[in-house]
Length: 316
Image (cartoon, rainbow, N blue to C red; front, top):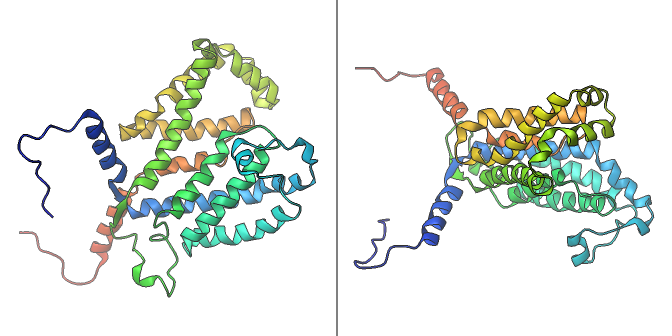
């Protein structure tokens, strides 16, 4: 298909049109399909982790007095009330089965849609009885994105009805990269908005370390008490965190920065889990989406060529 040539004398596209074209090219630019398969594995594995460690709190909500129910905005607009008795316990085995099937790539899109809606409903119920924790929402959004993409096309168990159209991850098959980029943008915006909130609500004075000392003492972790007794170290950590959050979106424009920002983010969450008791357990695994599997795919292709039987091409 030949590109369309604009007629002579036509006006050049405006700034908004050029910006939209650039965004569209970046948003839909192809990525290896194995990236989507890895995203599916991370999402369903994280969901199973949630079901095994946190879902019991959803079941307990059935016994809480409805007087404490303060629906989040979405639930208020949709008229969603407190979770009915017996629903949470009935959903749990269904979610486990769907999560395992999705992990294997069997009916992955249907499983992602069902799990995404059920997960968002369950954390919405938790949020309606307590404070909203922004680190839990990403998993639900990822599951819904997977439901809109061919997430079962690679890194999946072959089935009789899909073997003919199952993409082999060892081939460098590509597809539209918007699901991966959606997750990357969401993560970058979470960090940026966290830094922006500190800047707006507290200003640069937040970097003096007193806020960190307060929460370290409030959480009551043993290592937190020791860290709170080191004011200079708390100030340095606060300033580093503040600048790191505000500049995290740079990884979207300069991918090489991910080798510094992404490991730092994982260490940050693991340390926060032990020092503050806040680990974003269902958020930080998606930082792995920033890893580019292309070099691994190409290495596997080269390995397959070397090990393949038959004559090898001669070098003149």
